[in-house]
Amino acid sequence: MTSLPIIPCSPHATSEVLAGWRANVGGPLAYDPPGHDPAAVSADHRALLVLSWNVWIGRGRLGELIAAVRHGAYASLGAEPDLPLVVLLQEALRADDSVPVRSNGRAARELAARVRGREDVAETAARQGLYLRYAPSMRNGPPRSDRGNAILSTLPLDDARGIELPLVLQRRVAVTAAVAVGGRRLRVVTAHLAPRGPIGYKWMGAAGRAQQARHLLDRLEDDTVVLGADLNLGRGRAEPAWQYLAEAGFEPGMPPVEPSWRHTYHALPRLILDYIVVRDSAGMLAGARIHRLDENPADRGRTVFGSDHHPLLARIDLR
Image 1 (spheres, rainbow, N blue to C red):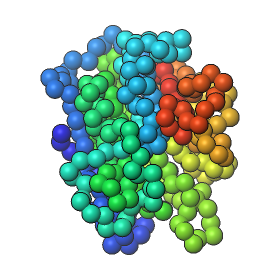
Image 2 (cartoon, rainbow, N blue to C red; image 1 turned 30 degrees about the horizontal axis):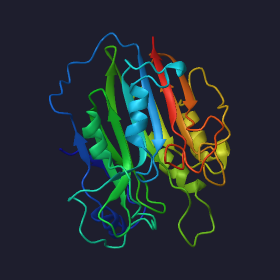
Image 3 (cartoon, one colour; image 1 turned 180 degrees about the horizontal axis):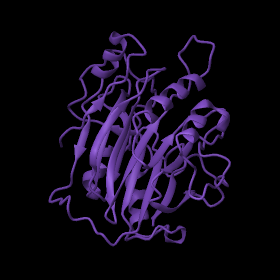
Image 4 (cartoon, helix red, strand yellow; image 1 turned 30 degrees about the vertical axis):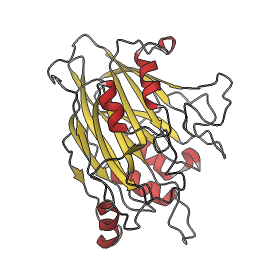
């Protein structure tokens, strides 16, 4: 395990408050599987699979779903098992000795932090032989673990970094990296915007999400970008955060297609919170088809693969 750089945000709160959130988590992670060869990337691939998922603080059965995708369970959706795979995670869980023994109080109020059977993202990456870049956002209450955004990939991850977003209610750090497919380079990003505004404020979280989206977009200069995120758009596409994405050239698929599903958040109220959006200013992509994955064909059950969010799976085709 090594580390990856975190780009701090401009102070939208006192440095003391942000310093408390930063000090209460472990270090970021950059893991490459043993014997990896960054140059051993097949030039034959002309498509890439992207799985984006909020795994509900490690409760989602991540290893099981990754294995299913890699073994062709979703080949009918264009997810052939021989295609490279990038996984963009939100609320990934990590527990190791880098997390401080005692909490300083700057942590998520997670009453379920002691739930058993949750997956550690670093252990899943090692077990599946995947590249990993993880940046913790916040601690999970008193237990010695944290949560954040992560990228796992069958392809080497280059030029990776964390981007700390403006503080709204809790600290949040997006993660971005570059991958090479078919001799071409594109950027992948995972992010999780604030669900609501600060406690005691009359305004809801839309203004904070807009601020976070603008900050993130200002730091994504690449022409070809695939963003998988829990945008938490409680007001849907009327929110300024979505308008900023559209103005920056991001679209929900190529060609743009309105989702057929009516929610991605599986609990109540059922809302569309999760998105995969693409920007292709250079004309590198031939198409991007996005599907919602359902554990139950009738979309029933209390959870979806163990999470309160549906996973999204995209096939990205190159020209």
